[in-house]
Amino acid sequence: MQLPFTIEQFFEVFRRYNESVWPAQIVLVALAIIAVILVVFPRRWSGICISAILSFLWAWLGLAYHLAFFASVNPLAHVFAGVSIAGAAVFAWHGIAKRQLEFKFSRSMRSLAGVALIVFSLAVYPAWAAYAGHLYPAMPTFGLPCPTTIFTIGMLSLLVTPYPRMPLVVPILWCLVGSQAAFLLGVPQDRALIVAGIVGIALVIRSRPSASDGSSRWRI
Image (cartoon, rainbow, N blue to C red; front, side):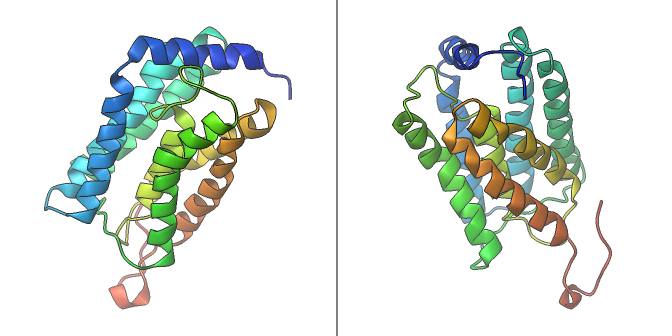
């Protein structure tokens, strides 16, 4: 596949972004940690707050990264921005307006997979980036598409069934797009997007309530 930019230009975009938005990266990580805390110590409004955080993260990467920086080297960044903002709107609609997203940790394989993805996105991802020779500021930090996507699918793995499938669409799409960076742009930690995508597809399949829930209707 012929990309409209070079590897050097790709990492230069990260450098310009990180230097320009600092210290926003700390705030973004703090928001992610707050979302996790709200799962571990749930409140009545936890689902709304977590949905608001996820909505903000996707709006941020659409506006603050794709439009403001990535568009300078890739015309498709405008499309990516639109899709990301649409994802933010989906979280706002289903999680805030309709209150359909509730999060809970359990001992299920689904929850354990979610925790693994969350830990990977916040801790393993930056460590692997450094090991691969991608040092700050020329590296993808949390709040950028790939680590944010992995985190998002991790959080969605903690959803209480039944849940709408639409919030999974944009993260799964980005798994398909972003995983190419692992092979075309030398970002080995983005291979985790393949795993995240598989988990996301499994979540779509599992979004139907079980027979014990007394309903077999899918929620769109």
